[in-house]
Length: 217
Image (tube, rainbow, N blue to C red; front, side, top):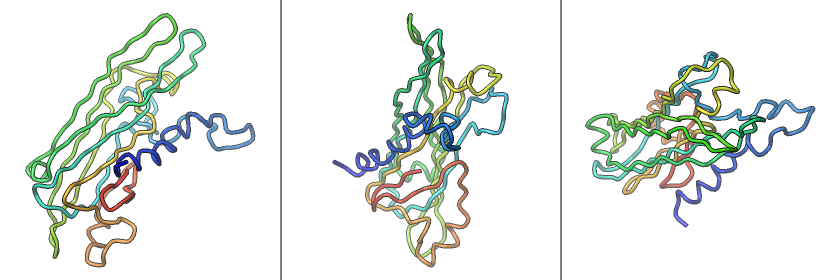
């Protein structure tokens, strides 16, 4: 089992947390609203209190020719005709690039899942883009600031959360792994790197160092 597979097992606990544990219990605030974590709503959702994108930055120490693998994971909802009950399916969007490509400019990975249906269920269109870029920073080592952004670009107008959820990216997160390099801890960075960690911007996610070769956001 490689590092990404091990991290995937941990991430699954969060991926399905709001799906399998709903409702937790009648008196609990937890999971009173289904799907609470990592929900990227479509742009046409009427309530702007929930984001349509996530943005993460972290530090990576690697050579220019290091290979970077990106794995976007989220749940796509399938709604039952008639009673409106939702089931979920795992979606994974993969990308592979090199650090020198990210240093040269942004790499974009668009994805589109068309609407479908049958006599019992229907799924809405889900579309979006995974973006990645990098920039070298001053310091004693070959460290770069890696930026990853996920945007929901599903079409449509939605009056409420229930209507919007089938077009959302639910429990969205990104697994990152690098060859010939490593990620720096955002919690306990080397002393020289602490100012650069403080400059990183993270919205909707926080990068967690899962192993010397893998980070999860």
